[in-house]
Image (cartoon, rainbow, N blue to C red):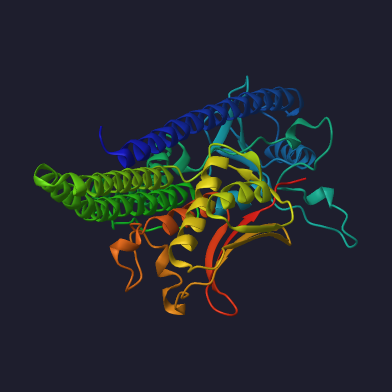
Length: 456
């Protein structure tokens, strides 16, 4: 059976059916046992009453008035509706309670034959609500309707439960269980169907997403485990779609950026064959520059791909930012100052982020020295790389962190392919930090790298 909801539904129904059958069987067995005990007790009482009548009634040839008087006396003493019949079945006498019950309608009678041919006829008493005296006390003389008062040791007083109602006996019990089974099955179906409908919707969503529709998401309804799985799937789908789009964009931009150095290499190699000895040196230098540009581009593309594929850091080494800034700043003659601040992360990635910021300031920052400062602000360490270049317009301060984006007017001869600042932001985010571009007082730009301080 391939349908999950059918398996769950049939399992629930089967368990309920077994439970209903077992409960019905136990109930019926207990009822039958109670009835058998009741019948046995009643038979014993009838036998005792027969012996009592045999020993206390006047003989059959006694006057009818005498027989009637004794019968009425014992009916009153036993609190039982009694009648006396002769050998031919003619009634000799009957108690008032017997005649009253007889007038109310047909009732089962128990006939106790005596040795002389006569018979005592008994109508079984029934339990009724117990009348109360004033003050809430029970009236023992009316605890039974036409029966004996409730006293310990009086057998006539006891009456076991009556037979079960018709709908719980014989075929009626089967019908009742069948109705219960149908009702429970009908009630369980919508619950099971709702659960499996969510799973089916999740399955269709996964299949649609796997078929290439990366924008597809599944609906999340409710707060149960299925809804949690659907929400987790949507989060994973968002991440996968972002990675795929990023890689597609990265590949497209990288292939575009590779054309320029490759074209220059091709031209330089073609000119190298016919070049004079004097121009060969400049051509070789141009070839070397293009090869280094290609190498840097490939390295940055690979690093960007690794950062996209691994949103969490693999290393959490202690890194002293002031020392790191001093080491990297020495390569571009930057002025470094500030306080020592320690963070945890990947030292190689943080070094690469600082190097990219310094290289960007060297390339576009003009002739004045680059200034680097390390400060502690609250729970964060902040590294600022400032220059005196033309600055970045406010509407461009976020776009410059996009992959392969270069501001208008920055030609290729300025160097770079537009991945440096994008890598800085990626590295900052992997360290739970931020990278921003800010305006510098007096002209120029300040690029800040904000990272959480290491726990003490």
